[in-house]
Length: 87
Image (cartoon, rainbow, N blue to C red):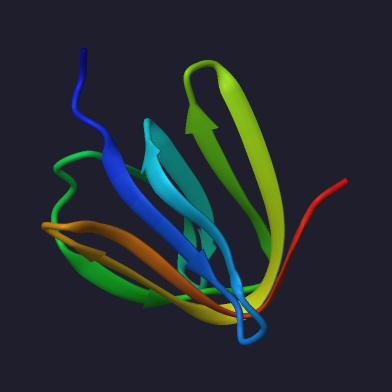
């Protein structure tokens, strides 16, 4: 089994997602980016768009507006100014 990326998506209201996943794609202010387990650390501002969470062939999509993404050796945390799960 491949290593998993620890991912957390937090809005001011609540934590929308937390857990191990295969990949996360997000709308960075300098361009969209994807994060896998073991990614090099970085931090970026987010623009309006979708965060796509890939895990085991399933994809969950969240609409976000603003915020930050922080990749560390422990995983990825997205602190969104506004976030809801897309329907």
